[in-house]
Image (cartoon, rainbow, N blue to C red; front, side, top):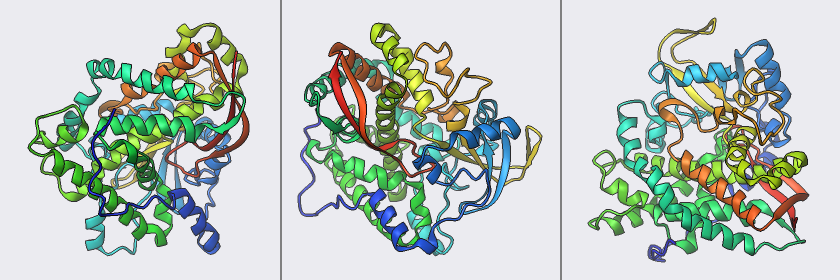
Length: 444
């Protein structure tokens, strides 16, 4: 359990409004500024994810033009890469299709065009997932020891204990919000352990994650300064933790690993903030939204839930299938570094190339009946939810562990969860998941 003392209480860290509340308020106050999407294949529009209507659009693209270019969108011109084969191809050529923040980074959004260059330079957030080799290699190796098989085994007991305790507190027969009570609580607790973060302040990690990961905020120019100020508060908090651990012996937490790493112990303030964003968003949103998505999917496909309940040996495969079906990060962006041909399409140097994991994981040529959750699916592990190649998620094993333990502890308690109330999905084209999922639990 993370037991570190919080930084000195001489500063009040804001906890409101959430990024979603701020963006929704901005949309209401500025109806004339709402982004306009006119191209039928412009899947950067966040409403199709909020309303869960994206499936047929991607299916049409996969059938007619798995690689295609859309122009004149609120995010500029970009290439859609929608098939499993094409996403793997782009991921496998990291020099040709760059992840570097210097070329645009990993999300479809770009900084507002009217930000002065000196301000933009101050606010850029380099992070190792948004770096090319060799910088990427050194920084990834720094944090990788936190996610080795041996570390995963070491952490399992505590994860199981925390998960079991939380499930035992759920109100049987009463409706509650699974996202808030289970998904957020378990993932922020895990992050607090990884960072050695003060336990009582762990919900700050969720608050910061949402402000950092909501790509749509780049469309709301009025929120740019507020987002930067909130991320500065995050950096201040972690900076105090960093200073408190300097000179101490190495320990398993991520801050200590960075302090004792030649590749990361002299980061600029921007790079420090960027890597915090990466580790917080990567460790929070993906697992959190899959934990919620599992419950929604099993409710949607009760026949598959019945199979799983009768045969718990299927839990590891079910985790992989749920990661495929849910796909907690919808896309990753790359930028072409040279003119190239991509399956018959001429990509120019500087072009924005967007890999839609959400679509690749529903590719009919790879996954039979892809729009259905199938807990016995033989090739569920072929999903691309963690990416592929040098940028494959460094914390994938830990995410899989948390999801497996959740399902195992639910089975141990014969806990079945039904969606019985409101369902609110994330209004976003990057993070794919749920803001609210009202459920009722029962024993079977």
